[in-house]
Length: 289
Image 1: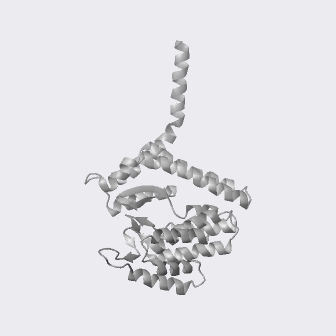
Image 2 (image 1 turned 120 degrees about the vertical axis):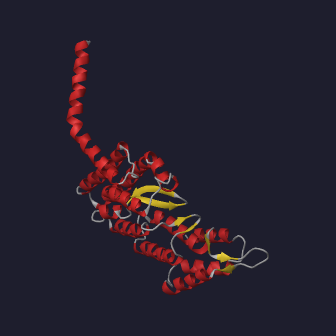
Image 3 (image 1 turned 90 degrees about the vertical axis):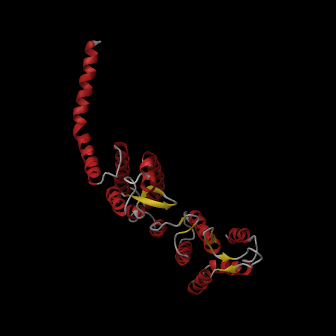
């Protein structure tokens, strides 16, 4: 028993020694970053997840070299799923740190410099801090990641999809029960996705794009709680279209006269006085699909 115990101890000692350089290197990186800004508190487990995310990208890029375009499309879908799983774990282990950015002590709360310092670290792993409104922060992949990785390997429709989505994903879409982008930008997004469907009517991405497009259309016509398209409707006052939205509807109809959304705009303008306008618009969108 003593001999076996000694062998186990020696084996463990050997393994610890052989891995010491790796561990030392990881610790050095962590300490180096933390010494630059003590507010950035990523644990060793967090860095391991960052490295897993980065390593996953490297493996995917190597694998893509061996695949045809249809296989690359499928690999993209799997890669997104795998990344979402890793990101979920990252957000779990960094929850307290992320909460402290806005709600921590005075010493913990972030300045713009702290935010930028953190992103200098995260960007090395194709990640970034992302403010999603109402004092909430998460860590996500860089918006252009999937386009950069897959653009030379996937079919044309997937390449176009990834390019458009990368642009959309640069800006926060909504926060605090309202749109974070302008209605004009939303209108142009609608036109881009409609153009995609016209260009690739048989794409396997059609259901996904159609669902996104219909969500955009509903928000474009009805707005959100804190960014409505109608005013009035209380104390006996009639509903009116907000001036900004009326100008935008006219701009859209003039710039994109052949867009199927033009018919929806006209339908909204004819029916916006109805109390059940949301239901009417939702049914109209479904019917037109």
